[in-house]
Image (cartoon, rainbow, N blue to C red; front, side, top):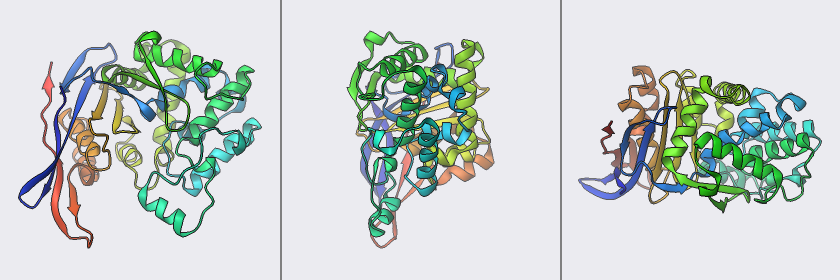
Length: 336
């Protein structure tokens, strides 16, 4: 059963409570700590993107098109649609001989509120390139081309590229593919429902891949390096995923998923973390939980804690900018 994770204070009152679930595992599948239900079933949404990106390597697309680290990083991204994001996705499409017309992710204003307002003020024409998932879709198209698959309907569950991705998700998450609950994500491709335990396990393996098969180990090492070398590609200016990796010296990867799912893989410590906020709020409920978990697991040093504290204890402000309360984590972890 989900537990209270984050409180929203206004003055002396707790005005809102966000409940959810947390699990911490190692790459062998042992649960190290948890709060709430470590087997909470949910769609893992865009937290799956770094796992899905493994297919870019297994398909032969990585070698065929000589993708750079910034290009691999944006394939793992839920990006803000900033100019440098658009340029990078265009570079991928140019390399593989495709165009934005081939992207089946749809368009949309930035998932970052401030940047979305900027797009609206400047009357920017929104195309599929601006979708936060355009990098992932470009990577999927690249895999299709490398494998000789047609790119029409590459977003459908029965397309061979989606069957390839499902196999990778099943293998990394260690869950039978027939037990994965398939839905359709916001960007039109299949999305995977499973216990958060299995998501955490995949991230533990992804960030500590020494025992994986050589091809998956190679892919995992390159994805880890790419996301840490170009963290600005994974979210954008000031985004939590970007700031988390930028300020932790390459020791981890973190990836947001819609409806307040989050996954972290920590190198060397052999830790995978998955969090789901029950009501789907990530802007105020999720990030304090992630930072608190990392602190409790002694992942962060004092300098890193200082740089990330703005995400752990968030000022609750009114419409004129006055601080009227605070948003902060309130849970404890149970250790095994």
